[in-house]
Image (cartoon, rainbow, N blue to C red; front, side):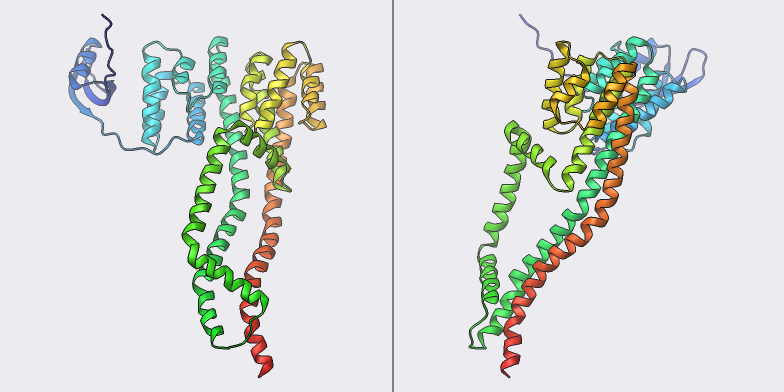
Length: 404
């Protein structure tokens, strides 16, 4: 008869006690109950004097920025010679997000029971992707874990910096458009009906622009619930299709790369992430074909992900990396030339790193330029829309003044 294994809920207990020499000691243990903590401490030769279950606060969602910060802290402490388990304990205690603390305690428990660090990370794929785990595994195998953790921390910090810059570039126009939409809705629902009551007392024919704006206002007042419902539902289903449907995702990613101004920014950021990822994998000693498994997804765009799959297939059959990248037809000539130089000199990781530095700097410059470029464009567009509504509503008043 098969036995059914039930998951036992564990808690974090903080304890204080004395060791065999009578010296005060303290620490933490994960266990199902206080009795289990006492038994574990006695096996270690510790006489517990105080055991207290830690209250776990509800934590925020764990973000890639949290993982990047943890990786930097882990790399710094291991370089300083702090033991791995103690490093997890220090970083976990010092983190302000209880969710991160719980994650690190879980990983620490796995490592403490004999699991390799990469194996412990692989149990949490939501936070540690294949690229992360492969680099940790390569570092463990080669005995250079501290060095690879440092490289991994640099890679994650630069990747997060690029994402942050793109978000900041998009945030300004999106926020202004949202505010303008709210203003237009308020005008349509509350202001224009008041003008309509005034115009009805004129007893004269209204200009075509005014009639058009009033008709739009009446539609808004009568069907506002349908308009907002359709917009909210349409946006939700569109985002779900973008995330789940490969064809929609591919079409949108291609469209994003062709959008004027912003398309160039997204394209350069994808190239920067692609070259940075491959450079980091090469530096870790990961074989090229295996490294390309992680590179495509790290680019953040399905166009580059599919191009990476084709590159991987060609490289696995003996084609050089530069030739395969040229056939993919998504990389600029500068990246191809630097890759070719790297292949000839045996320093692909160094040359790809230089290409990544260049395109990261390009992203910085474009974000700075977009802020100054978008402002006048947005002012002109929004000024035309709101100004057109205002002029349309004042046209009957102007005509009335001419008649008088």
